[in-house]
Length: 169
Ligand SMILES: CC(C)(COP(=O)(O)OP(=O)(O)OC[C@H]1O[C@@H](n2cnc3c(N)ncnc32)[C@H](O)[C@@H]1OP(=O)(O)O)[C@@H](O)C(=O)NCCC(=O)NCCS
Image (tube, rainbow, N blue to C red; front, side, top):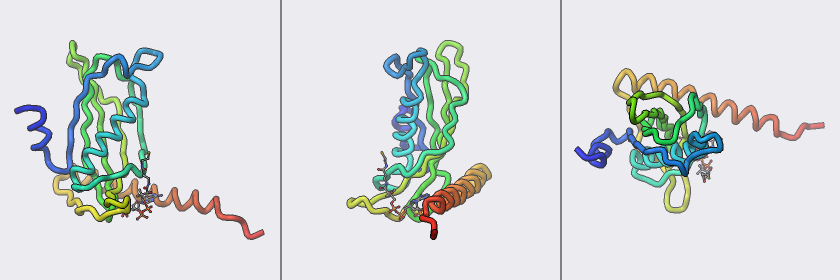
């Protein structure tokens, strides 16, 4: 089965992308630049969410990006993305990043993060997405965790907004 066929046959809420880390992605220390990985994370989240929703999507937020270990030039990096939760117009996409050394074939979990993507119509207005129904134990666990993160994001936004309100005096 070709790589393209394997991606196309993945469940609609999941997407996998593998990429060779090339020298143009390196930082001054010779490892892969964090910014290169952030750009790829955004692209993978876009592909996963827009494919699930069948619509264009925009990135609302990126959170909990943890660079657990450096990624080296010459490694193959795989992005495992899935829609964990849907709201009315937003989707949380979780991405696990695994780096593989070509010669030793050792695989390392190097990064995980969560992006919130919002589906938009032709005018850029939020657009309703199909509700995601978790079925497996793992999907239910991810859905519960995503729901909690959504509540925490909303609480944080409300608390920061409260600090910006002009005082009465
Ligand atoms: C994303 C965007 C379309 C949302 O517009 P909006 O006017 O806030 O729309 P809504 O109030 O209807 O919110 C849309 C969704 O975003 C969520 N949302 C909006 N602001 C939020 C915030 N501060 N915190 C958490 N969620 C938020 C809402 O809960 C809603 O999700 P839901 O329908 O699943 O409940 C708008 O903010 C935008 O265009 N942002 C720029 C996106 C972009 O260009 N990204 C790339 C940057 S380079």
